[in-house]
Image 1 (cartoon, rainbow, N blue to C red):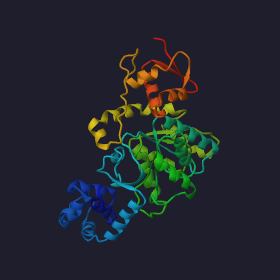
Image 2: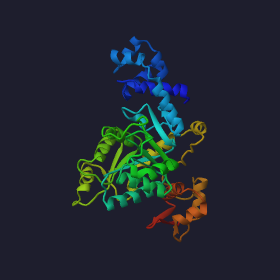
Image 3: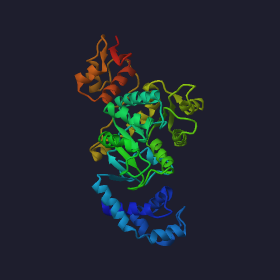
Image 4: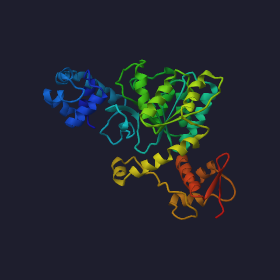
Length: 384
């Protein structure tokens, strides 16, 4: 979106009293933020949540210098401002009640991303950080984008695990996109946009104040198909994210911990309350597979052509036997698997494909009854 249009989005958000819900109602009624500013006072007052005071403030808005400073900061710092009318705005996020009208993005968002949030304690144990890094490496290898909040502890381990596997990760901030918080994550802050995106709804210069983090948490869960809580005490902010996820209709997963650890009481309680217990990455993949299939059906060639950066998923077929109905890539992969076990690393080296795509096709071949996975990520061909 050009700056001469975008400035009205920024300006409307700056109007005191215009929250996300009112913003959405205004734009839905009048068509665009510019048309909101052009609308008569009486028409503005008719919108639910917009009384005479707010309508008057819209009509009298004059802080255009601040709008220009915000646009200049975005240009200078290579930050994109993606509105909810943009095809790259995450579709999952549009389904929450008070979605942000626009996002500040450093890096890139992709329509085809399949997001899973991984959150937990800032004062994580060694076990918690190790488990998180391993889980997020495996999620990344399976083509899943890991979403977290760039906080200390579990969030940091989640981003690191995904980056270590050369996967995609999204960090959602509770401050302006120009502020590194916590400061010790400066190196991670630099790496994430190269393999994903840093995202926030807060303007440049917004400090990481306490009330911002519950708002940030709703975006973490809103972006994702599900939320994994690794470690959390009984008053952890991660439990707020889990509750928000439930309210948004997302899946909630929890990694069990020691009954003697205070840092595991929150996660163990989540499991008692019905969260899905996670022992390995397949507990997550099995649960979200129907949603992945649904997302694949949403892709149409026109959308892919329009964005130029999006590639449609290979179709996920129902389990079958035999070699019929294989895609070219599945057949090519199957030819490199024999009765002798072969490692995932060997298959990646032979095919030259990305790990996520290899693992996706291996899963399809397994569902079709053509191969078997052995411990240690090794695969053999079944006899037909």
